[in-house]
Length: 342
Image (cartoon, rainbow, N blue to C red):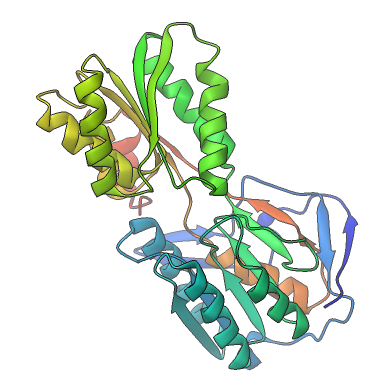
């Protein structure tokens, strides 16, 4: 599949397909924080409409994860809203080989386009090569994966994971008055999200002499793993008074361990986390968590907007960065009451 790309003026994300969806009484516009000024352009636009289109969505992780559930709901709701003829769905359940197989299966079923939430930063080359061979445009969401823009995929839509960590670090500095012994619970190693969230946090914390990371270890995005890791760290570092969790799932595990150790989350141990799920944002409102940086899961409008533009020969920005809320004690309850938290 041959794509062309060019530099051009930034396009407002709300214009990408002109889409919006409504869920639980809230309108979710095709809004983004920023976008790349480089674009991919279909050299042979077909002007194909969604009503004639079969679209495949490859989800990477179990829907017990609130983020994955909200992400999947957004894709499904938008597909229905824009009138997609058929949406094919497959969940890899954290199995890289299965995700490759899922994508190839959808290609064999004749999809016209693919939306992929990659599991890892590498490993999808066989699937992307197959899509390329069949001239099927690919939109990647949430996590970046190895490949070439305008060849293996036409765009990446997601959060600025580095900036998320910077925001979380600043909140932890504020919550601890710049004096803390920190545990950092990291995501799966080799994952682009983990890499960015580790670097962004370190770049801020390293500037504050009173902030010391006494232990950092992967908990693989798992509540159970995080509880175990945190319990072990507390035994060797009982004076820990701060936790940075790279996901809400791991924050939940840390909170369980902290309580079992006889300490109070929010009082004895300040916690910052990333994702912005309803359960953790409620803990922010209740004073148990200092701050939670949202990872916006509402990819549907932007993903289908990019596909619409692609099939109609309009420029598609290579990177579209979503806007993420920051939840603190000042706004958490208000945002919960508005129904904007997933």
